[in-house]
Length: 221
Picture (tube, rainbow, N blue to C red):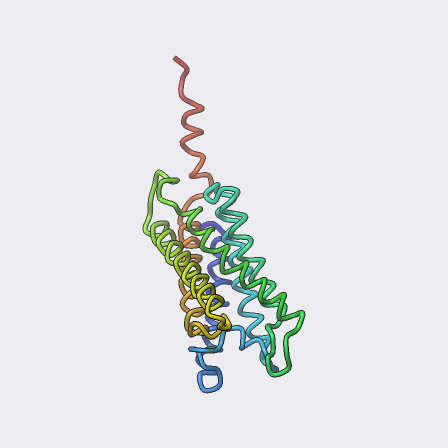
């Protein structure tokens, strides 16, 4: 198992467990249908949410490094996956808007980071795991690709609902159950990331180069 991939899966899994624990502990305080996940970042326990998201971001970056070192991701796939990680770090560092007080610069930066993250991961999963790019398919790559396509559909659906709301003069957060939709998107994207991590961990370093090496040693005729 490639060490960065192992570390990445461990960090990402721990981050997911922290956020899931916050979700369960605050069911009576935060409505998961209407309130976003980032609500956990407000208040005195916000550092726990930031820690969970930061671990997920660090784990994602480690998985990206593993895929890049094995030449499985390509330049565009690597950039997209690192965009997801960077967006997560931004959302962890900057708190969302506290609407009981009003909008803030921190909240605006947080929103940009979350948009970058949610858009980048589907692109990364589809680009990296697309079946026609790799000679040897695995369940992990097919799962990552399928979840990447599902994530793209989530993003397109959200964009469509926002456009419909704008046309009808409705605020974008009122045209859909925002908390439920965000959680569905987040679960799909994190599952795609973990599938990429499992694939990275299973592939030996240098596997992608073996056919080229064999070809280089073939006698010239």
